[in-house]
Image (cartoon, one colour):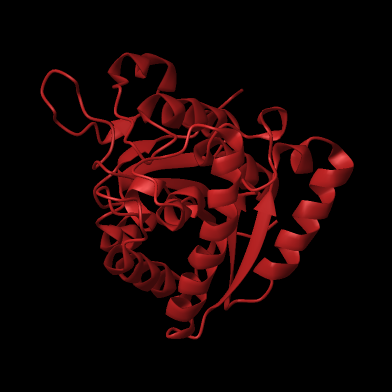
Length: 256
């Protein structure tokens, strides 16, 4: 759809404070500045942002991520508004207009509906200073209509939009060797790295390395280069897009 398109996904742990789940404005400022920097030099980006439920938690006086569906959806309804208001304010400082796109798995469930999403994203991406910001529509999505987490949402949207690369921002530098804690910088065979999965979920996080690797496999099998990188160091995005920088780079599969 769009040449050299990068899909950037930021998880809840990157966007909210671990202590109470509220939005971490300092982290958002840093991330927005880095994404705007890519746009300013001509890169086209899609931004998949978690954080709606987490940013709505404090409005209900909760100490952690809610377990019941009704409260989770209510938190999302409050939090999504907070999230987009913050993004709109921050991106406007860089003359970037954000566009909200909320999806459920049902929106990509048939060729017809996926075509509508594709057309909308294509029109948004045709404008160089509009940034589509995508999230799962958590306020209405039920289990049978959920992507599972925003890692999978990111890679499915990347495939639909014809993206060149996906960058999954998380709370670590990338995939770490469990024996040495050394960063694995290059992965050419995704099937050989599942043994490195760790139980690293946080109180306000839905994902973990297991879900990330499942999403990575989907992406690389679709021919999309994928990175796992540290979301608290978004200044590294420019280097990653340029083919260097600190991350785990998963090479796109060939001949599949």
